[in-house]
Length: 242
Image (cartoon, rainbow, N blue to C red; front, top):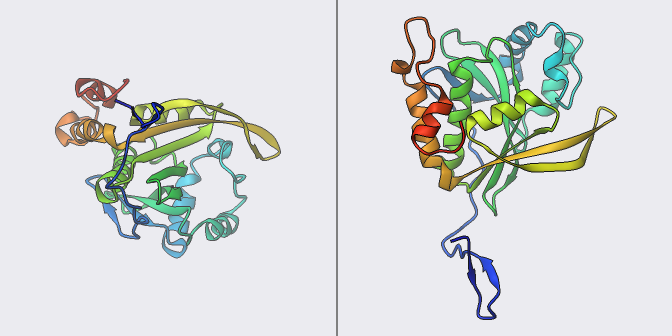
């Protein structure tokens, strides 16, 4: 059931009598087996992030981000200073547990406490973080904070509709595609149509089960290759598309 009828016979949304506004995300560490996530500290994380991002030699990771590729470390540090230290967006550094190095960033943003809606955005995974267990675990840890710790109802992912890798990542992580907002943003003096994706609290239990099975060390062989994909595990527990 997605609605009820009011006394006038009109369909209205389901009542949420016990609902109350959610808290803002805390500035505490999210720790996992392969990574930990800390609120970004420019003095501690900037140099590590810059080194990791230097592997993106052609700057292609910046094409769909709000900023242009920084020319040097000082420019990157200044950019980080401008986007860190805020309550919204709340930028985090993703730390690889094995090396202790910050290899990527992601933010909680567009936080709507009253409605229980929060977005993950400003995602920039360096080449050293991409396609690793740590990168998937980072997304899982942020989901777990949103749903298990804070009790939000809706988690969002938005990206340029032409950003095929981001759209594929959203689906792999378990977000559902909702549609395209046409001419939503002017970015870098060009049009951006925005693709919207979401994940709901009602979907989280099954997704969580799939993530925990995928992240289990037993799901990887001696060479570090996965035995079952996250998509396969999502299907097995009935958590949406592969």
